Picture 1 (cartoon, helix red, strand yellow):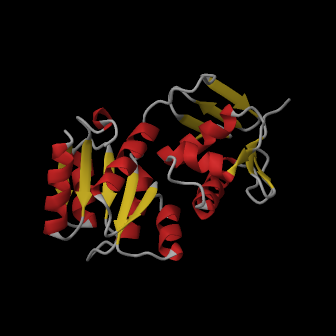
Picture 2 (cartoon, rainbow, N blue to C red):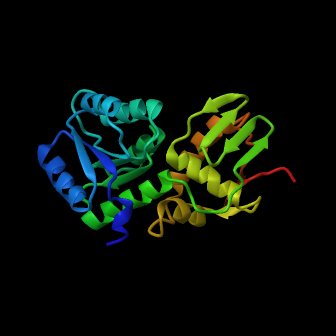
Picture 3 (cartoon, rainbow, N blue to C red):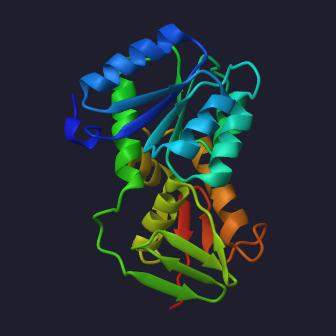
Amino acid sequence: MGDRRVIENSTILLVDDEPQIRRVLRASLQGQGARALEAQSGEDALECLRTNSVDLILLDMNMPGLGGLETCRAIRNAWNMPIIVVSVRESDKDKVEALDAGADDYVTKPFSFDELMARIRAALRRSGAGSDPMPKLISLPGLEIDFDRRRVVVNGQLVRLTPTEFDILRFLVSQNNRPVPHKTLLQAIWGPDYGDQVEYLRVFINQLRKKIEPNSERPTYIVTEPRIGYRFALPE
């Protein structure tokens, strides 16, 4: 069943317009020792976040009023906690749109309880400080990364990264100029059940490049290794 301690005492916001789904998820999370907050719309979710400290959000896509994608973008513009989309939509297009909007993971309904708890544990672990040996700070031309504070500064301006974006960046930097295969990176960030979801990586890498590269079309730092994966190019 995984390490329950990761979920214990965390606060998770359930955003879904169906009361029955919220009720089932609330009971499941409380059974794991989590505190569950509920919102029946995107507007309610934003109001809840203004008055509560939340560690993770489970977000439905199909809601009246402010839709799931708009809610995801609004959350990501103001907060950094992990967002897991839980949706009946199965297409790659829907998944890519959600990831582009700032989601950290995507779970398709119907889902198994064990799978969802595993995704939540992985997201909560990623949002905390990592245990890999890393320098506290690296300073490169136009780019400064503070690993202790999880802050990125580009050309003197603080840049907001999602938890998953930061963890991808951290892992790439930790490899000391070595190419990282797609599968290795997927499993390091999302867990052992991943490995073939290369489109996931493309979305996040593209977003990272837009945020930290001088020219995202000709990246200086996050370099593509053809037919292999990606490499963070540190100066020799």
